[in-house]
Length: 620
Image: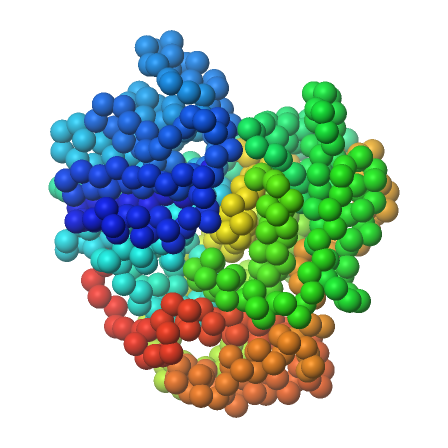
């Protein structure tokens, strides 16, 4: 696991490469290195998980140089195949196979990788070319800046690091605030920075001097899945799913560094925990699995520590109860905003950051999580609400509004007249990737199948996986996600709707059947509860978060910004004081997070952050 960065068609100095590496040192504290030539540079920060004594990056093989971030779970099989073809390897590190794999398969090399990854290949055979690729779920993001006129291309694993290149300057996307409030974070390739994009999942981009930037998207796991199997019973589906998950969890436990598990006390992470504990026992591991749960000092709603502790007792793990004092949250906000690089409207960011820091402080470099199960199996309340909506209703519009940090009716009330007019002139539909709305409302498959495709292709990588990646790697911890493995994604797509979820309940039927007998009945039968921060209770007068929000969203700050009506924001504070609600508290949280992000990356000069769009290279 690492962080990578580099440039092409640019004059990048050694000092600049070292500066960018410093900005993402937390994601790879074990080693830093780079290689460069005429007009190109590739750098790496290493977090040593596999073969700590080997695997020195960049990898070289003749005229091929590679840097790599992630884990490849099929590297042993690929190495064996490549050795048969005459290649030789000095170590058994997973990334060491990449130059030979590229020489064998060319630009389609990533189709043979099973794991989470972002890879950059510098090919100096003939005319120089740079090839970058990402995994099918988008677990390892790669941000880039490309100037069509000059041909300069820069990339990095994190936005603050990308901004460390001299040629990459931060300008705020004029539609960014609207996009953020409407979707909690930009979807697709967009970021909150003008001219900076992120590679989509399953993408391969080729940069050359002659053709510029060409980006193609490989077929994703759920799109290439076999047809839905209606004949399979729920019992059979649960058994098959358990077997697949057990296999994936067992593979993801393999590491040359200590591995733990995140256990929220809900179904998804508890099932991963149970399967991991069983796998370690079956292979005769010397010690028990260590599990981590987070809770908050005091008496707050939604406390899951009792369920997590029961799962630990039931599965025989060594349990670590992490407790964070909410009074410390304002002190953490700056770190969280900086590591994320752009606003993410989920308050769970504070908890995620604190939890992975505790994992690393306890001596663990790898942690298994239960993320992504709801996207695969229809576990979110907004999904069941959309399924229950009658035909002929605007269920797709209501579903999209449920993704928002601030619903449309309230969002439009917050904007100043000038900003509302600017949004109208630019076209508010630009905030969503092309084809998203059409696929959701009129695409192929059932309503649930379309919703799951949208969740997996757009929301999961942008909103969920980047958050997990950045906030785990902020503490030098590699998060591994069994539910994002291709075999699980493909299998979920073969399930008929009535095996995925029970309409109106959010119960993930096949997943519950897979967990039957592995988890305590109290955990299996408990009401579904999202893993989140009780922000409605914490964002209240007398709490430190309240005082911070009041300060950040001051009249002076909002008037300088010019896009939000201060009196409308002040009315939200009054509403939260009189009648606390999830909707209003999330709106205040989202607005505060956005303002802190602007201050972090653009300083106190509000107007200088936004500029009129300039010509930016189009992807071909």
